[in-house]
Length: 136
Image (cartoon, rainbow, N blue to C red; front, side, top):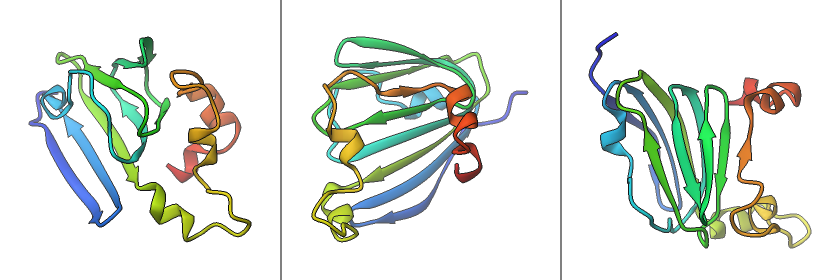
């Protein structure tokens, strides 16, 4: 399987984006140095493997895993270059979600109401057991 890496953006607007990365060489699209994002990020790893470091904690990622990152967390990704890789990345600005709040609380509260660098990784078996895989 030696297909070229491709990245497709399905949504790319003010405050929100959804992108799909697939193929070999996906590590080139990944910022492999520590940085902050300006948005909340949800990674869904469909295929491939690698590591994500968030606030000094290293998570080994596998097929079906979800990684949650808020803008105040320092992170980096390492995607293994010798593997076929596929992922979805949803980026949402906090201000967008406030518009959908019914009681003044943000839908992104689970991303913020935790210690930085903790509870970022949702393993594939939990993603499947709660039925979230079908929404990915």
